Length: 239
Image (cartoon, rainbow, N blue to C red; front, side, top):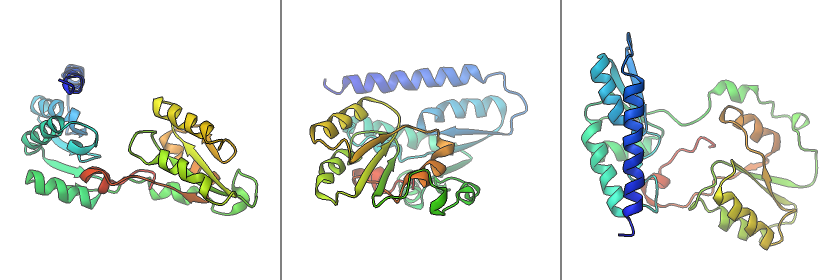
């Protein structure tokens, strides 16, 4: 019974997504290709494919059955069966790393391509790596920066707890949009009296992540814990 709220939320999300996308796109004409991003849009994509005669490209940014490592086994099994039944009808399937592609190919028996989940090279070329163009003033301090969603199981709490044990010149900066997890981390920083050494930076839109990181960071941190196949084989866009 304790897992009932998880089932109710996910089924409601699937139903709402399905009807929103199908009814919102039923008048599409002259479409040659439909792209479904992640598993919730897979069924609507197949219906739109049938209505329009277009090809369907399914792009899974994660191995969805284990996207939430804290989900109950029933939810994980549901996603495996759901994705496995529908994915075979797609014209092309892609993901973000060769490791996740191999996992999906093995689990579902289909060919899965991959494109790294990273910004275009043009963005990197715009970033001038010279120290003189950085927005933080030259100091003896070294800035360690995390950029991404604040979420459980990303080891950010462990990182903060470890920070009193590193050199005082090390400054930890955490950048992401406000949510409940951020509030928990902020309280932890206050409790450990680390306000001067752990800072929360204002969030930026995804298209500005590379520039924002280059302006502040000396070292970039991705402190994910190996929890299941998805976390072990992920390709974060901040990489």
